[in-house]
Image (tube, rainbow, N blue to C red):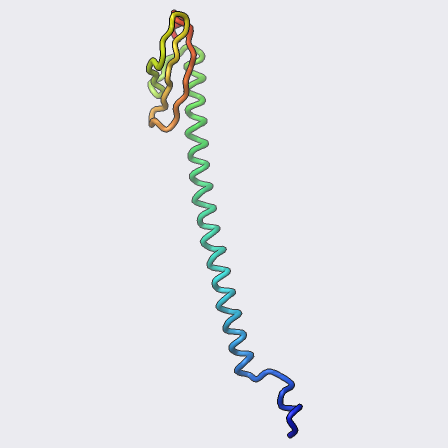
Length: 108
């Protein structure tokens, strides 16, 4: 056998080593995708919960706009002037706050 025939291809061990290296890289990439999908699901649940809470707070503010009382949204006077009062409205769980301008003498 001459020298040129022996150096024409890969040995079985070289091919197996290459397959093992590619397999390990593939496992690492798939694990990264799995972790990313779990994080995306967790973030989506958190955003959905925050949006639901914000919607409830908006509904409570709408009730206050109609002049009805609600125990869920409470307010304290933030600043009071001669004609206007600035009231801080806080949600029940204190996760949302807003400021509302009310004319002095209004009941809402």
